[in-house]
Image: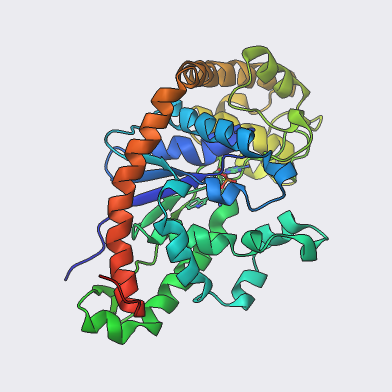
Amino acid sequence: MSTFEPLVFSGVQPTGNLHLGNYLGAIRRWVALQENNNCIYCVVDQHAITQAVSVWGGPSELLRNTREVTAAFLAAGVDPKKHIVFNQSRVRQHSELAWVFNCIARMGWLNRMTQFKDKAGKDRENASVGLYVYPNLMAADILVYRATHVPVGEDQKQHLELTRDIAQKFNTDFSDRISELGLGVETQSGHETISSFFPLTEPVIGGPAARLMSLRDGTKKMSKSDPSDLSRINLIDDADTISKKIRKAKTDSDPLPSEVDGLKDRPEADNLVGIYAALTDSDKETVLHNFGGQQFSVFKPALAELAVEKLSPIAAEMRRISADPGFVDAVLKDGGERASILAEKTMRNVRDIVGFLQD
Ligand code: TYM
């Protein structure tokens, strides 16, 4: 029985203020996955323009941020030679497949997307149509490579569930045609063996940093768009700024507990312990084993020192790489060419499956 080739895909929007949540929740985990997998990592510039121009900053900002996010991937250890790094808009097949998915996904499915509700805010009538169908483009990003695994932070979970729903509906709607053309891959669905064209992609979410919270409010996600810069540690922050932000991070007045259970109802403490755990590749239990009973006056300086030690080399490498935009552009061009070949292979099949005439 043939199965889908394991393939990892993930992406980051070039919308500025790349932060510790993006790094610990996603990019750093991509680096680990490179060891034993084929990986495709994408700067999703078409997703970036789904909000108002005032939010994404206009063309010069988009170009700058696309290069900066690419530099961050490389500085964090993504290998663009062994794997593929490119910007989404270069590979036209993403938007071509997204159109097909616009016709597969149901309004009801998209109406449930919490990120749309968050980003559109109260003025939904004024949100772009692109923001509404954003998850369909995300599904296309993944499925145009028939990727099987997608490492992301917790906030993308719902979008990945939608990606599976889209894949499943496509497989079912066109099942006869997929078999007729011999394009199906046999997969197990409960006790049944079915023939599918798209895999049901697995989200790879987890670890102590799957959802980093704001440093100013432990109930809110650390986010690029938070108006307070003190709420997040940016990847390009210098050592003094990192230390200051951790020093000023909101906490309660109790010492750290010795057990993870003791972090319940203490979102700020939980968040800082999670950051420490992620930066040391350990878990919250281990951190509390070492710091349980200590005051924040002891824990915060230790965390600041650790964060500076881990993040400063990345920031320095980002600056070094960003100083050579020609190099960054060449990486994206090369990655785009290799990605296009893979994406076109899928799209030729999709056109045949749907019934679009082609040469
Ligand atoms: P984006 O650009 O908002 O975020 C990039 C990655 O960072 C993760 N992340 C976080 N992780 C932990 N804590 C946080 N506070 C935090 N904030 C962000 C995100 O989960 C993500 O993994 N829709 C996606 C981009 C995208 C994509 C894709 C991802 C487009 N197509 C295909 C995977 C596959 C987004 O807006 O990510």
